[in-house]
Amino acid sequence: MPLENRYDLQQLLLVRMDIPQWHTIWQRNFTRVIPFLDFCQISPSDRLQILSSSPFPINVPERIAKKIEKGSIDDPLFRQFAPLMAEETATAGFDADPLHETTAHCTENILCKYHGRALIITTRACGMHCRFCFRRHYPYCQGPSDFHDELSWLHDHHEIDEVVLSGGDPLAQPTSHLERLLSALGKISHIKRIRLHTRFPIGIPERIDDELLSSLQKIPQQLLVVLHVNHPKELDDEVIVSLSRLRRLGIPLLSQTVLLRGVNDRVEILESLFSTLGNAGIIPYYLHQLDRVLGAAHYEVPVQKGLALVEALRGRMSGYLVPQYVQEVAGRPCKMAVSTAITLS
Ligand code: SF4
Image (cartoon, rainbow, N blue to C red; front, side):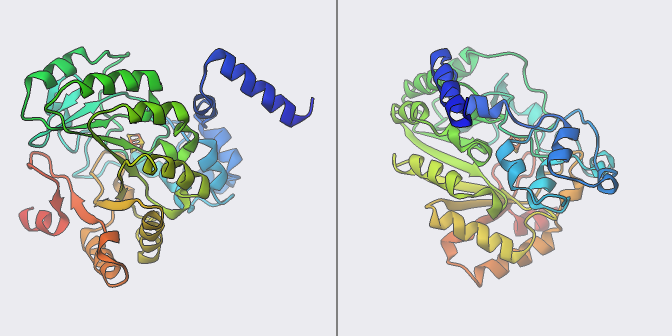
């Protein structure tokens, strides 16, 4: 049977079985190191720098693997998703819970870090595993949740007017689950805004499908989507088109970026990233100093260098395209401008 006919047949079966296309694509992610290195054509000598397994397993969408320059361990996408030996180097100041989130719970799945806002850990799953993730050691609760305790807590706390859907990645759950949660949040009148933080469309843009868009349209509150994106290579045409479907619904799109050594710590790269975002109608919101999580020290960019990069961007770009350079400091009532955080440390 010709390939295209087999593809049609596969689509038909998926529709019959009610499995969305994005989910099938997601299941093709690389989740073992050797096949991923083979696909990226990494040489035997370079493989000596890479862990063969990790308690935080690799998880790389095919789409991202295809964009990696073959044979290069310096590729900015490879560096974000491949487990380097450096992860096993213990570094002073880096620990498993850098933001003290395990002590910030209001319920099992709600973190209360800032005034007026509550963050729901909607799922432990992600579209991909970023090696520098500050939740890479997070003790996620096991199994599905109906968020009964979370919704009841939110009902009782009238001071909360904004809810952040985080994880994991909220778009890693089936749309029907997300819709149930959104619909329940929609009935809590003191919640005025819902912010959805995601990285999923970077690896699997098919996630922004008709079913999701129809669910998002039903929310009475103002919805905002914050996209995690670190390098212009992540933003190909298909990714941008899928994001524009959200924008066309009137959903404001913001971005957050982690400053990462060997990935985006050059002014030309950041300029290209933020102008590509601006061209797509996505406002660069935050540039984060790396959270000092165990296993990620090799990604840290010195703050003085970060400050110089941001200053250089200000001289080259419109002000609204230069994000706030911030650092989260455990126990502080808000994210802090990096310059302030240095003064206080
Ligand atoms: S997608 Fe977000 S939550 Fe998931 S591993 Fe990456 S940074 Fe962490």
